Length: 112
Image (tube, rainbow, N blue to C red; front, side, top):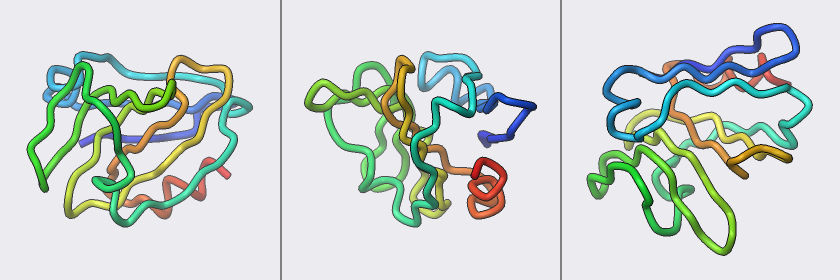
């Protein structure tokens, strides 16, 4: 399962092996100053919209990878029964990240 942590002045998003394979992407690291908003998302599957390119989508269960919609890019590791941390970003390759983690509230608070 993915993990999100604050490391000094950066945010580190660590993906599991299968998440890296499904999402065709490695881990992320970006400055905390790039985070415009942090929220806990209790229904992460509905927050990830658009066209998947590339990634994995099992309807009603999981969305992993890149979603594109209206000129915006979202990277998701969204699972049906696991709350997520939703990050709105500025000046980064992705405009939003939706990452399901074991304790979303604690992870979100560490980034505020």
